[in-house]
Length: 155
Image 1: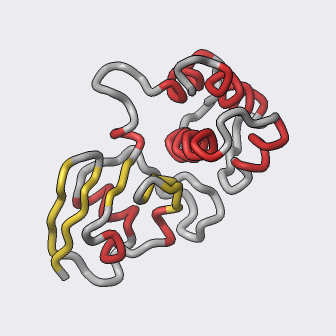
Image 2 (image 1 turned 120 degrees about the vertical axis):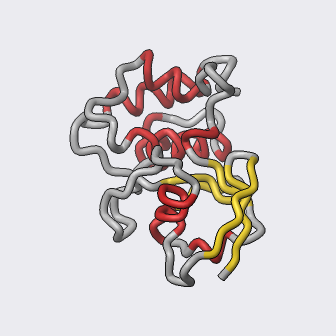
């Protein structure tokens, strides 16, 4: 099937197998490898992207479902060399260790703040519960999201 998807503001058209997952379309066809494949079962959230402005796990969607739609990946979050406020907050608060979950975690956190601009710690923990981190213990991730929410840039 021929699909056309706007990814990070650029239209990507390609002929794809009907069963190709969106995460594989992004990584293989669009050459955007920031979106990670962690589990292929939607359990870990490493593949989280924004689909028409909503956080989704791209391993749960077929690429053909994205035809004519907008997708934003971690590569599209920064403005050139200027990090997105959430990326900056993750950096400043040491909210990563191995970094494998970080792209999905950042995308989920941005979506969370779009919905709840001034979350409590409990709301951050609940909002990120679909994204797993096997390294950090979550403390600094939660701290980063709260710092971003409290900053002028996060509003």
